[in-house]
Amino acid sequence: MMFHLLYPLHEHFRVFNVFRYITFRTAMAVLTALVVSFMLGPGLIRRLRHFQIGQEIREEGPASHYAKRGTPTMGGLLIITAVVLPTLLWADLGNVFVWIVVVSMLACGGIGFADDYLKVARKRNLGLTASRKLALQVAVGLALGVFLIWLATTGAFTTRLSFPFFKWILPDLSWGYLLFVVLVLAGSANSVNLTDGLDGLAIGSVLIVSATFTVLSYAAGNAIVADYLGIQNVKGTGELTVFCGSLVGASLGFLWFNCHPAEVFMGDVGSMALGGAIGTTALLIKQEFLLVIAGGLFVVELMSVVLQVASFRARGVRIFRMSPLHHHFELGGWSETKVVIRFWIVAIIFALLALATLKLR
Image 1 (cartoon, rainbow, N blue to C red):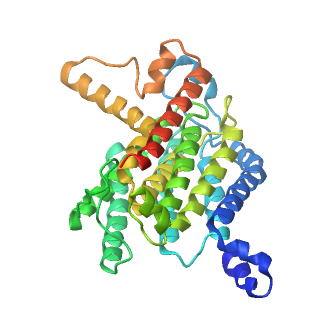
Image 2: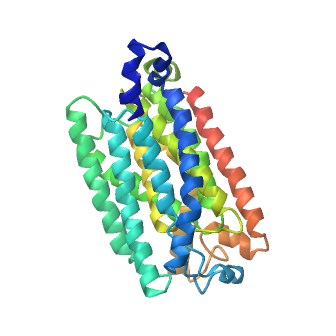
């Protein structure tokens, strides 16, 4: 909005030329998201407490978590607001990729909202069944995939994949890209959702991945930088830098309220929205496989659940004390704060590895 309102004035006042630069608008988006979080956060938390929208705790979880029962949840509504408003304020609203990622985030957040609502209504840690949740994610993924394939027919997008380290390998999936989109979106949404189990763990990790994709989005949208780094240049995706900047600011703002001891939890409405946003961004800038590295912590958390379930069903033996992995270390004697900070360090290492691959092609 600000881009459309103020940038045209640069013809008369040179100072308004600054709104042309994605870097400036991204910085403003970060600050705006922070301000929105700080302004709306306390009021939202009071509202959630007033309506008794509190978190239910798994009975089989660590005993220390019982004290968290009743902590306001669905704080993801604050995250979504703090991402969408700055994006609409500072991004180029004529850019189709901005609308794709915003709609995808809202759709995934809607699935999480339904899950949270059922948990609150039933007063149990059981919302949507796994099959229903997955079916809804597949539906969103299919809709996104169909639109991207149509966009590819116009020449504004491509269904080719790119791989870290191998810049010359660019296979075109054609209609097979539809299944790939579903896999990336569902995998990203569920992995962030599973990581959300300790105060500040998920949102801090999302902050790190979002900052990484802020850099990647700028690189993918800039033809000169993309050519230099040997990555696919998708014209127009540079505006996603503003969106990723909003994610960074919103994550920082929410962490203020979600750090230990948490005043509010993001709930599935937050984790699903964030996972969907990151996955969609990776798809749009053609860095789907780099997401596996940048979001390595999310992948590890997801695989810990997959391996635990597979091992128990096949052999009746658990690999971990409890899954997702952060609970394994908690039950092993690590304090919650120690688990969170050490997992953040691991997330930073994964992010640096992802950025390092840009020069190893």
